[in-house]
Image (cartoon, rainbow, N blue to C red; front, side, top):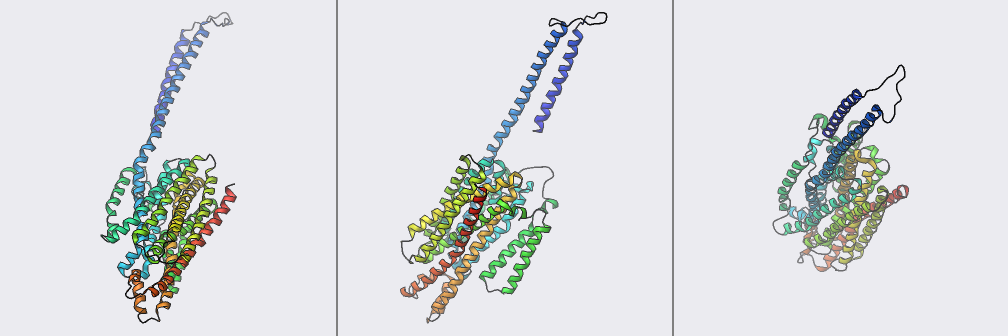
Length: 553
């Protein structure tokens, strides 16, 4: 724009010089008759009036030319600016969404084949950590991207597809009205990754081995990095990988937050000294609060964003994400262990959930774009609707697990419907919440607010899987031992089941009567593991109702 302004200023100076020169020539040509004291009366036929009229006509013509020239210059520049985002989107979106696709695929891969992975290691009792280790490392870096995005010189490479960064980048280049629709597209891409991950992981587990499921992603990650490097490189003066810029990233806050979460999960799921873990949890959590309040220049958890509508929206994201991830990691165990189905079958049920997430996202995006009303109010009503639908669906899931007998077929249709409803509710709510948050904080704060929203979601994922699966494993360990201890070979069966749940299929050692007694233990454990999801989903409904009644009317 600076080039266009200089060009316009030059045109103005040139035209003004020409006008002054012509004025001098006009005045010099005028012969004004004078008399002894009083000038002659000036009429409309006088040379001065005639020349003045000519001059007025001339200046109007010159000014019109100048305005036309300025307008043409501005129209050309605006036309170029309008064309630029459309062109960039075709290059930027693949770079942003390819990495997000792979991350989504990894999530359902781990959820669907974690029983096989645990069995391969002979550590069925450590199954919660197979899931939480992946989610925990994801949570460690997720909140940093809201701040990394402000360091422009490295955000191009660093933002090559992670959920928070892709959302920040797209929010920067599309209008507020279109953000819901584009977030719907992003969730559709994410859902596609989740949809492919579950069956692809099952296929690799049964053929080339689960390790290759992660190895084959290396070329795709390389392509993602290349696309990001080529198309999201933004060069601005006085930016780069400097000490000043690195100080803006809250590494200390991220480290202490992850340490706190890890210590909390260890307290729930291991036999490590509770006193030591409690001390670590207290110190790390206190350090996190201190760093965020007094040390961090740009904290990953800005306290001001926790206030009001933006902070409450983050807690809704936390509660609903918690409930959904309990379900995602619960379904494979229910289908494979309690109903004796294959990994491929459990993967198909996860596909239902991911398909409905995409439809829910597109639905919310369409509503936010088409309804001519306050975006925040519409977003809050969509959030309330999604929260109610999700919470009621989780409760019905608990009923199915509790009252449907193992090794039956009556559970298939209800489970399919429930997963479709949960996915639709979650997808629509995610889009609505993100649009509401961006609308509240504006363009300047949207990077930090989006990063905060993803921090809530990533933390919820870790805690959901860690807490629910710890409840599940503790119930299995305690009740299974109580059941098998009196038997002659009970200790052997117990140890084998802790290593690999597939040992249930060993009909030579486990007869039909004992099998269903053991399955009853697994059923009770699965029922108990859903309670945290029910509690968090109800909390989300309460919070969404309060916000909608306060800000949405």
